[in-house]
Length: 121
Image 1 (tube, rainbow, N blue to C red):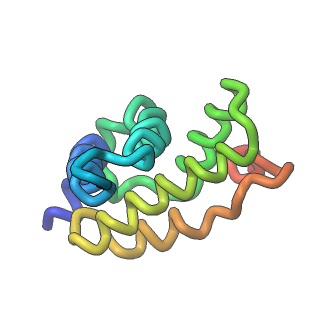
Image 2 (image 1 turned 180 degrees about the horizontal axis):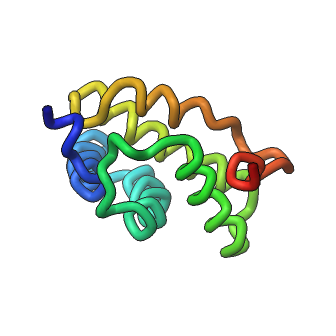
């Protein structure tokens, strides 16, 4: 099925095309499109060639640690994680991502001082 073979790059491309059409005001893309693009860039860089079906909370935690190491603040990290979760939910709704993958990704708690606990154990 498509859900089994979709790469993260393919998911992100489809999601960005949708977001660019959805987040519009007065015929122009809103700032939300930029927020989404910036949030998903690291995901594509680190995991883009992998199957979306193989993504999960440990990989999202790895992405989060990448942002921590880059000096991104906690609030922005949490917003970026929310966008990643939104992309996977959107993909599950369109059968590009298996539903259990989106549910697993959504299970990662927001960054709150214990960041990286999944990766360390």
